[in-house]
Length: 48
Ligand SMILES: Nc1ncnc2c1ncn2[C@@H]1O[C@H](COP(=O)(O)OP(=O)(O)OP(=O)(O)O)[C@@H](O)[C@H]1O
Ligand SMILES: [Mg+2]
Image (tube, rainbow, N blue to C red; front, side, top):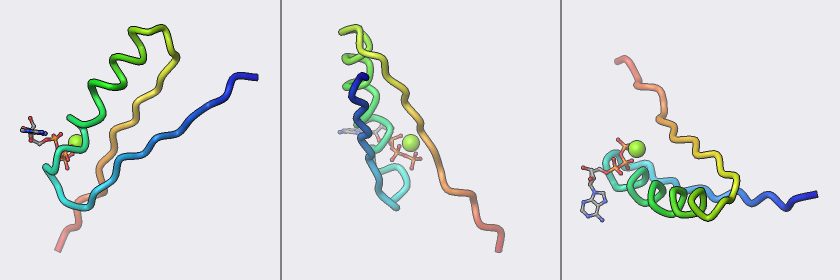
């Protein structure tokens, strides 16, 4: 069975570079033939 690795990049600050930090290494892994799933999520906006 293939070994699955989970890598999380998290920071509560918005616009801190989380997505940008992840896109290039994920793209490189895919180009190398690795099977990758990128999930880019945001917390729900709070309505005050
Ligand atoms: N190392 C860097 N140097 C300069 N600009 C950067 C760098 N990393 C990210 N940025 C820029 O900062 C902005 C925010 O980056 P990004 O969208 O990756 O942040 P984020 O943490 O994913 O934001 P959000 O919380 O909205 O999802 C973008 O315009 C991006 O191009
Ligand atoms: Mg983002």
